[in-house]
Image 1 (tube, rainbow over the protein chains, first blue to last red):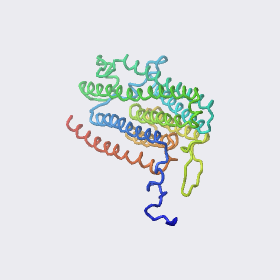
Image 2 (image 1 turned 45 degrees about the horizontal axis):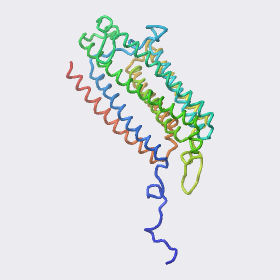
Image 3 (image 1 turned 90 degrees about the vertical axis):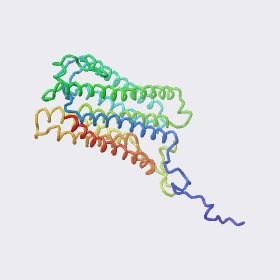
Image 4 (image 1 turned 60 degrees about the vertical axis):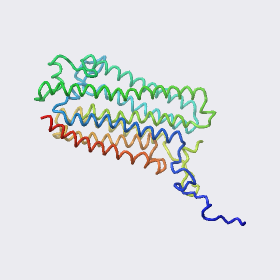
Length: 242
Length: 117
């Protein structure tokens, strides 16, 4: 037989013909993307339920009335200031994470360590802020299925509405449950993200990825960390601004 | 260097793409600027009734700004803009399901509202 290859035996090189991967990413990274997609569905379901309940409510507590304290500094009068600090902390920790990934591409181990540690600190600061905010709201009487028992206290959160007390109590209950569930679920993601980042930082310190010849793991946890930031962007808009 | 940062185009043409430090700083500044605009709307424009802005006008603006931020995070920080079209579509197209749920439940919630009053 000569060297001629029949068309059926010819190795095809186009992406979808089996010659090479149409995605061109490593398996673990692709699975991280699919996991994040499924996680996006979970968060979307929670946020869309929140939207549906709020659209169907007669009244709703004002965000600028509920979130106006800066824990440790002022009890009220500063709407959005504290959550603004939290938002910038999370954006900054996302920036340090992407800088860690960039340093990983250059195999600059020391820089990766610095940026990873800063990312972990940012995550811990965010969690601390969230703990303070939860503590403040809990102090005001909000918790899962708990709202302020004092009617006048409750009314302050509904300034400018003519809705009945029963409607206000229903909405306050829904708000409390949705707020603690959604920010709790997000906070849990931040918490696991911090744990994963710490594990990866330890591996970088141990030189695991230096030996492996690639800092791809930093990139994968980076995806998770940016996703946490992405979710916060939506939580921030729909709980604090709208 | 791993193959993940090296993208192969067409006939073995190899070139580097991705996030340089300059680009990271630029995206970070864009994200911060958008957040600042949101704060200005929430803390200055609405309370002081500048240009007659109410929540009815501000809310769609917030949502558009949020989607811009989401785009910058996913496209640049998560590097999706520089991946293969196959991966981009695999991640972006399923988002249609989320849009579908938004349409269904916002429509439904208006009926719930009518039931309540």
